[in-house]
Image 1 (tube, rainbow, N blue to C red):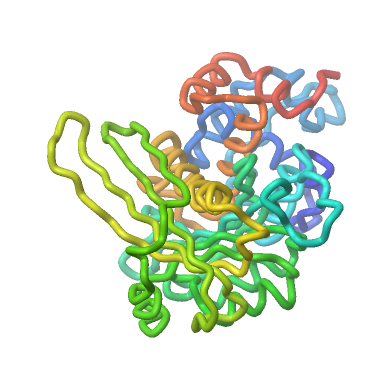
Image 2: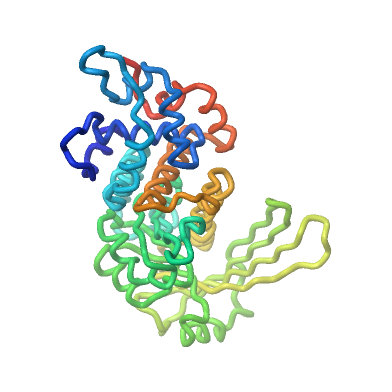
Length: 377
């Protein structure tokens, strides 16, 4: 991890620099792994950390006494306020992706139902607490692996409406050949489909809503009554019952680049114990043929996409991201990136309860180092 963080440019003037940037960022990572929500909390974790922990993170000792002293909170704050957000997110994404290398590409070029391609979800999130009356809140667009929930990349955009123009820049630096990209209706754009297929050599499963009126009407007019249910699931969670049905129809002439199949997703939900069901119908399109992806795999891609919303939920509920008052410079984005890293490493180690893990890490400053694979000197 430290080697990846060392690739991030240092925003500070070289004169008077005592601690290397990678060491300061490593301290911040450990603090966030221990539940730090603010810049002040990061500084407090550093102040309380034992000298041997700080030394293992690369914090330098006093040149005269050799004693290792925690970096001041003002130093950590200055770094996170001025950090290059793109470079930090690139470093975090590269390290997380390397923890669990993607499966080897299939021997046969096209995917098949027996050998489906891995998937990446694209979705945006507003850091609601980062805005003020005169300053809009920070909005981030991220790409996340379905299988590991590792965030591979993240870019800042001016607002949700500007996610569309940030889609290609977010994905340009990622290796997406033989990967299925999933996205919500905002990204059901013709230009996105062309970019994914012709430039990135990827496939797509994109939700379509009335923001694409002609295609939406075309999908709604298909003969769904004659199409059998290809995948059916029922489950309970978050206090509700849910039934999902997926129908898939191969049809020529869809008004969308490279699209070969149309999908109708019917969700029926109700609070546990209630009698009345609420029905929601959605449509999607994909360039995967019936031979390349079975209905069950298409359903997995759609369910997998919602894992990025679950990640955002963890950041909000466990880290209080929407309520965070971190607002200065690039610090809101930097803290979001560090939360992605912390959640990613905990998930990599099989953690089911993130909040419990953060409390456990807060009780022992050595635990974050073990999670990160950093040995004591």
